[in-house]
Image (cartoon, rainbow, N blue to C red):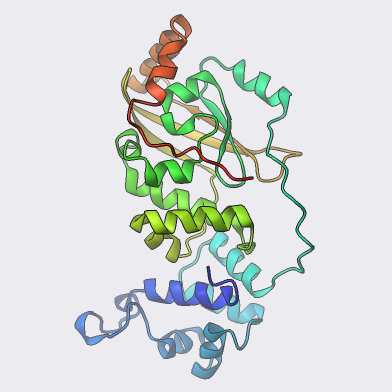
Length: 295
């Protein structure tokens, strides 16, 4: 996980993603490396080639704010990506790691979520474990069942490709979200184990993790294929849970008057009349176990 030179690993990954054509440089077969050469990045960022090489190799790990801004511009980093680059260049002193306690959702938040019969809602932990979900959320998406790790589910459960109509986007967003949650703290034992397992078992995860994309969950739209009511297009909003660092509350809603709103209402009535229906849809026979968690 490049724990000894995280800044250099990030710079190399982003350099390989830059397209030469975006800067009027020849690409294609004339290049032996993906993306731009180190000398080209240095020229575009206004620093010496030797200095940029030292940054990538870890011989200089504390670029100035001006250099950080220049590199962010060349790599077309958004606000989150720039903040991550700054965090790598300005690491805070780490205290001795205390044992992690099992993540728990506050009872009041659980009661609130369960009082939303028409709003799918779930709580994710710092490793994207589903810590809690109300019945409608679990019925909408079998990847949102309490006890499931969403990263492991997306990449190791073949059914996830059927649940998410735009699986490639979901996969990329999931990895970027895990990176955003981890920040510069890649020595966390649980994170190391999770990334190691997925890197061994999933080529897609390995490729996406190597990109070093950073993108926290905020809001957007997801499309689901549901076994009981068909396709659903739902918007979602996320909220940090005060008093529980790393936990986020996600609430889904459908466009008023849309077919998805009617389907979501139908799904809610189905599970209200037959609570076991949601359980039946969550884990079909023969599905692999992707819920394992390590504390």
